[in-house]
Image (cartoon, one colour):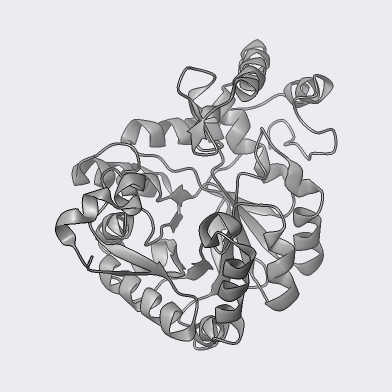
Length: 349
């Protein structure tokens, strides 16, 4: 599989490489890393030909954007595609000395000390976009993704409804459309972590893509039921985030492995262990199967794992170049470890 193949997104001029770079880990969620390590990781990706980089203000409370921008602004602007996200506004904490006890500090161990609020109105989208440009030191991005408009982050049905109201009547989506019509951005997307949100977006808004995390991985193909067919019918493409299911499909079934950003339950650990055994029999790494599997779906244009070190980036590149025999996919289906209707890559593709 060619990880550097460039794929158009929807009906736009936005193009992404099959293997992209997810900037979440550069926000230091679990450990504090040096800027030099972030630079080295980005350099390996860029030098290898990875041409799509995704980040967000949320990652490290703006830390990822600083790091991604510092590296990319030294590169020719036409040599990469860049996306970031909107929906959160950052500002100075009311009590800077007490920020260490905030939930945002708990989420990002090495994150920066800035407070936030959700805002999907025209004012919020505009400020988020302009703040991101300044943090990255770049005067353009190719795509903006509406971030975390879901029940996990908005908490209640009323919270979700209010966020959608801000996007619609509050002018947030119109602001994105204006940026696109002026040529400031090429595409508008939404980040989705839970089933049910894609149909809701498509009912009200003309989307170009979705960044789907968790419901379509080697461990979970539930998006095949409604989300992915609906996107195909509407001509909306899909980028897969959290392709390693937040960790366990990269680390394998070991103590402390993460699934869905939490310690994996015993049933998941057992399932991954069975997958690993099949991969070993076919001389394939579990990471290769996890990375290559989603790209077999005709609506998926890119996978964006989040390497946090040069070694992880090298491993991702190597995994994308592994040849996976079709017998491996057949055995996963035979053992009911993969849905029978899930598209799978062809050998040598």
